[in-house]
Image (cartoon, rainbow, N blue to C red; front, side, top):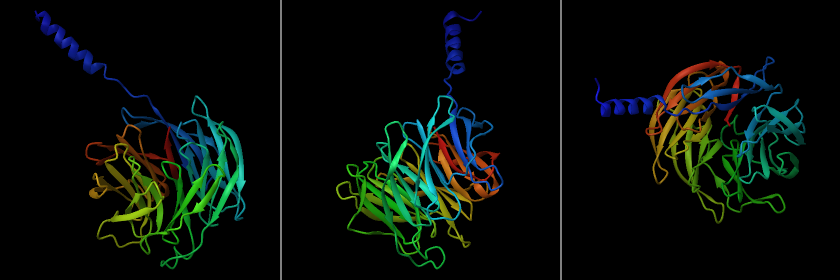
Length: 371
């Protein structure tokens, strides 16, 4: 017979391990840029306990150029463009229902061509849209119910840089608000500049800052990611395949350039198109994708925001245009657009390292967002 204290201890251990809490499935929105009738926004559910993904279902049939969820997870905004006109862009707003489906609110057309990026003001009052081929950035006011009001300002960018084909004129690839909402920045791949503007919510205007922020010639700034501590950001440079750190001056909005780190291997010779950048929720690691070599680069972030390479790993497909980190910080999912698949990686929050786990077929995946 097992002694009572030992029996109780064994029962306690059994209960402790057998009743470990499980995390609920996380809604995952996926954009498709498929040209054969499957483009749109899809909804799937990701199980962070075992890494499984439900079969995606289509919510919207129109091809999105970009989409963004509001910070509170109650609304989704997406851009579209019809035809070849410079005046056929639109921003659309949707309410996210309790079952995670989308209910259309309204749309606002605006002058622009190829609206490739959306960012939302920290207070949810405005959207910034970067138009890649116009080249312009527009500000659009958002009402309290999440619907769109009107275009409040428009900025036209000019210039060029040293790459004869990819920098023949301005190509604003993305625009971002600062974490405090006082400034806005535009990653201009064509001019090697970070357009910088003071944002005044009282009159909805973008006013250029007096000091230009110039990247290295031929870098090709594409996207950026703010560090969670709000003191700086990292820009991913599409053309030269690198990450550059900038310190943020909250008083003036000026960005001071720091060190630059290559995201591709030293022996990389083929043309590269670096794409996306994300920082882990714990602020200790940064991730970058490279199209061409089709890799992900992982770096450790020191307290002074210097970087140390941790890993380079295959993206699991071709043309890793976007990727997203699960809110738990334990998973990362990549959209490999040209190979029609999503690749799931487990992520070690202590080391930052990725381990490939599975591939899911999906038509021309682009944007991703966990709710």
